[in-house]
Length: 333
Image 1 (tube, helix red, strand yellow):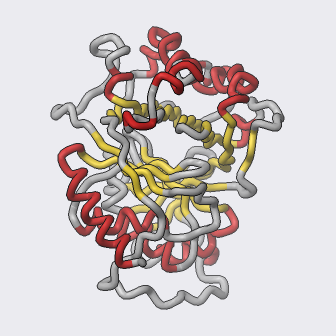
Image 2: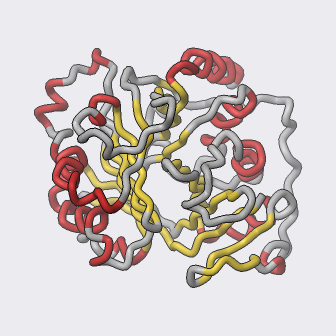
């Protein structure tokens, strides 16, 4: 298996809901007019609390300075596990549970914080740029390490890996990693899908409405907390590939045959992690969720946002997932 270190230098930011209009022009340019920017990595995720942006340095220039824009204080790099060669975004997705024990758990054991972005095409593991030498050292035994330079994939220099680091002892794999944050599962069912970039102009108006206007104050008031529905929508345009995560009701607004669907038409349920904003320094949150899913061989998408984390699991597995995670949650108390 290969671990690709992508060349994008990324910023992670939050836009407050009340300030989204100030940033809309730049966000529309990044999402719908990529030829007008040099941006190659852009992701926008709306949650009930805010909008989370993951964007490369060229894309970040499109966003105005604003009191409503909060930027995480680090530069992040995207890692991608590729099976059997090929490029990161065109390969078949490995799945977050497939890399839970080989990537996510070892990084947690070495106190390296990760920020996850699963897309329709693949899974990106974001690490702080300053942590990269330790990341490489930790994973070098398990993976062929490659880095992307000017679009070309080359071997990562092994001298970058071993400089003075001593590997801590790994945690005992037989001991479950305790889950220390509250879990909840909204009632929405979600679709993880994509569309052909050539069809993007035909649904641009609809997508803009979904991204910036449908979740306004009127809708928030109309949906009671008791309904269990939450506002969640994710759009990514990364190296020319589009990924969308939206609830089933939103997909019905799109014309037939525009969105890609799996043969099974699979629907996903969400597990939302966190009672209070999680922050960026705590290590092991992704591992706490992904390891039990990996043990149970349950596929999952995982999307970290500025304040909370979100795992998506197949609809039919949600009860067993909640049960498994609750068991680990009680272990930690």
